[in-house]
Image (cartoon, rainbow over all chains, first blue to last red; front, side):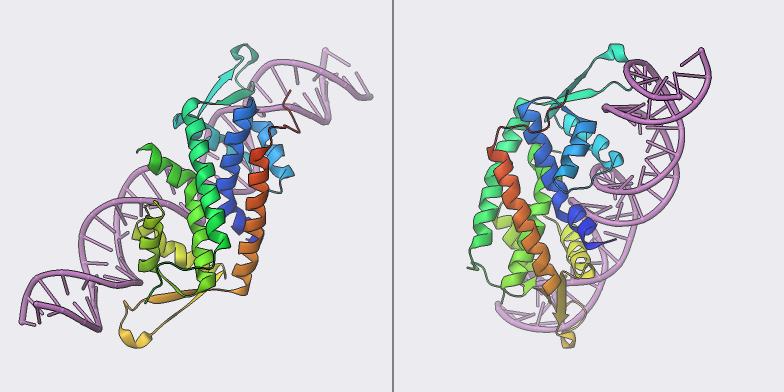
Length: 113
Length: 113
DNA sequence: AAAAGCGATTACGTTTTGCGTAATGGATAC
DNA sequence: GTATCCATTACGCAAAACGTAATCGCTTTT
């Protein structure tokens, strides 16, 4: 497993999720489209990761989805951000800012002995 | 499982890891201390999560560790950031900046049909 | 009209992570 | 000498991630 894949898995995975929530806030998000979008950002996610993820985020109540059930079992499913999802996104953004501030300081508040 | 725990698991977990790398860059990091530090930041990680994590980051070559082997099998293990770890941290910081920029724009470049 | 391609999701089996709790063990304090 | 603290290890279960392959309906090609 190469370094890039490791970074993806360990850390950037969480970034995708933020990405997804953010996009879902702007308009409907479709799995297939998201797969491409993430690749444009240099990430590399496989369907086996993304689709269960979307379902889970919906189960958490952060996304809701709809589908033209007319169009067979493989019709595209559109995901939208819920109110709860919005709160999550806001909270995460705050935490993100805090993290960045933290990264800029060299001060260590609680040094180990 | 409450919402906060979900957010932790889904997204903030990656933030901790960045936190860890960052602290390891400033000086030695000890598991126990990190557990407290993370709690100060409102996170809630259990030993069963943290210690394997530290080991894994070491296995990835991002951290190295040392221990006063004199002091028994449970002596505190000090983790430091390696050169490779530094690169990872830099890369992640860039990605972090990109993410924040992305979050500020409402423009959707590749709209789904 | 049969075949090939495309957009999109589902299914599946394996490996890796995450989690909480309990066990361990040395050092210090009382 | 035993109770407490610091710190790690052990363990067993549940969840998540991964890649690949299968599926399904629609559209284009020949």
